[in-house]
Image (cartoon, rainbow, N blue to C red):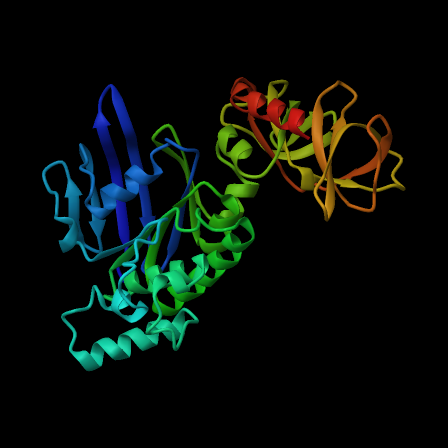
Length: 363
């Protein structure tokens, strides 16, 4: 296993930069994940690391070895990097053991057999040696693809949307299985996905990309609870931006009351700001004297997602247990459970307002 260092990577021409000054670091044995909408540059970055796409500026190091820069482009097969794609890419005419053995032909017969059996045990498919890919489920095939990539013990493993072809119910559970396998092998890994549940299930560090830029590289917890940009606040989880007024260096006054907050750089007393409010910040309580009107609701099986209107007309979301069934137009009791508010400059609100309006219409 090796650490990965990506420093100020640029890919594409000046008028059409697919990647714009990307920086990220993965420690040995750490699992990272890149999140973002289609076309944001996630897969391009993965291909640059794999050696399948050139860089125009910046450097990529695997361990202490420079593998990509403006002047250096180490061939893909010389990088000791494993890649798992979304289509599995298993050889249909080969047995499972021959698929796994494909990248370890330099080992002698005994060593190959030992490594194959070790990996089949690790991925929960011991005894499947002689079966063929078409005899396996999609999840089993993806685990075999993972085993084949792990067989040569790569310095780093890259995974490009590895669960996108699977049922929604299977994706998150398989992501947890893959995390366990990678940790057992001690493999450094970087995965690309647009599904935040997969990212949170597998990753130690998560990066959110938009328009070729890496907006934040942080722990999953911080990405959710301390987004550094309004786009991240919108893309990760569900939330609304409501208006507030700076009262002092630690508090903002909103329609939800006086909130503790970390203020944006340069904010002063009296400034108008935008405050992020997520559904789990507002708790439904029938006994509360504080009532808000239900303007929309979405039944999600285990819970309702209510859209509530504040006195000034702004709208927020609130999750409630599914047995609390309240019709549109009624008023329900709520309590605030927000320890620390996330605040953005007011002018950045437009980046999130359109997406939130769409979300409200869909509830």
